[in-house]
Amino acid sequence: MDYQKLLIENIKYYRSLLGYTQAQLAEAANVSKSAIGQIESGKNTPSFELQINIANALQIEPHLLLKVRKYPTDDNIPDPMQLVAEMKLLIEKNKKDQDSRID
Image (cartoon, rainbow, N blue to C red; front, side, top):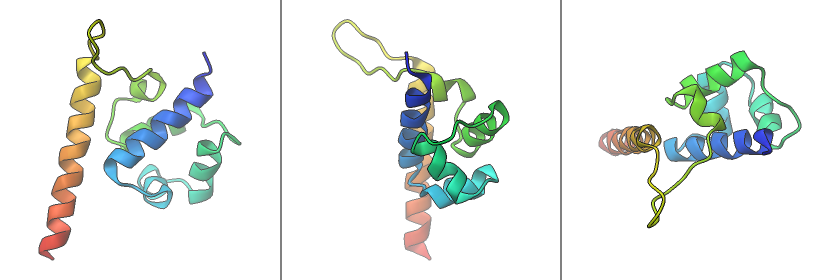
């Protein structure tokens, strides 16, 4: 299994669920935008500490960055922790969207 590719896909996936740009993720993870860009393009692999910072910035458990995302089919039941994390992100994004419309 190509864990770097999986890490990249998951960072992009959870970043998009939050509606974050690379710059917003970088700010939340306390790194430069170019660092996030290099990670997402596969030019750089984040240290363990940076993976933890990225997961915290994405509001997910760190192990989800290296987990294969599965979705329901007739014979496949998804990981409940993954679904809870995704639901939390979508709720937070919707809340932020509503707050920005009020202002």
